[in-house]
Each structure stands twice: as C-alpha cells, then as structure tokens.
Length: 203
Image (cartoon, rainbow, N blue to C red; front, side):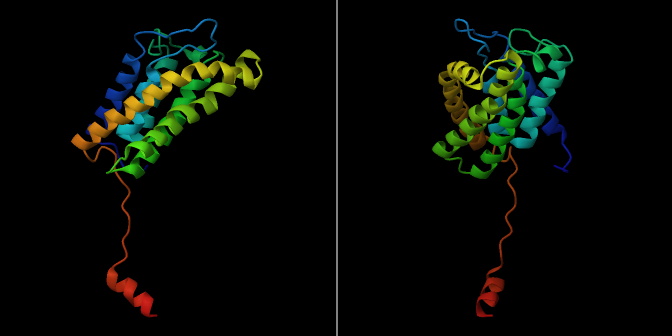
C-alpha cells in the first residue's frame, strides 16, 4: 500500500468511479413495498474489484462515495448527501461496497494469471454479495428498528440480480485480463534456489 499511484492508476480509478456513477443513472428499482431499492451500481463495484484489484478498486469506490457524501447526485436515482450514509435504510450498503471491492480484488489477484471461472465466480460472489450484505443488512435493521431476520428477508430480493452481476463480472474480467495482463499486480513469490534447497536437504 506504500507504492505510489501512477498517472495510469489515477486514470483507472477515475474511470471506474465514473462507471459506477453511470450505472446509477437508470435509477433504482423498487419491488412492491421493498425497503431498499435495487441498483445496477453493485455491478460497477464488482467490476472495479475484479479488474483493478483491491487497492485501486477500493480507491475508485471511495472516490465515488466521498463525492456523493459531499452532495453530488452520484448514487442511483440522482441521490447524494450524508443522509444516504447515515439514517437511510440503505446506508450500510455503500460501506459494504468498500469491503466487497477489497475482498474481490484480494482474491482475484491470487487467481491470476489463469483466472479460472468457478473460483473467480466464488471470489466475486463472496465479495460482491456476502461482504456487502454483511454490512448492509444489519444497518438496514438498525435504521428501521427491524429484527435482523426481517431485513435479511428483504435483502433476498437482491440475490437473483446480484448472481447475474457476478457472472457478468467474471466473464468481462476474464476478457479484460486476457487482453491487458498486469492490471492487478501479483505478489512476487520468493523461490528458493535449487542448490540451497538441496544443501538444506543434505544437512
């Protein structure tokens, strides 16, 4: 995390923050008397983690949220302001995005360069669904004074759409990483020289 961000990194962060904002332009979808609306912006969050990785993906989501908290209408349906991060029923989900994008990016970095489909699907679902709900659902329950099970039941309406977003994310990310390898830096693994290993084996 101490490495400096290059101009290219900053451009990628800005582009993905804009992408997440753009996915909110169609607005939110409410099903019946649902408490929290459905939005396409979680797709942008998943893509940010799977394509940019944990660090740059986190900064892209954080940039969007900071601008939205400052009042810019960047959340779905043209919403903005601190109320959407404090007392709103959906206030926990933006914080869940921050956790989710880190989980997706961290796990994706360990799947590269191969990026196998099923492990990638699991990594994206863990970050894009489980991690986001882990924060979003309890905050909904707290802000509305609901039992946790009631807020969890309401969140079930997200699952079909979120599962589709997970599949779309993995398919898109696979193509991007194939065309542009190195978007997510992989940790260097220190290999033990063969002669050193042999020397230790004889000791």
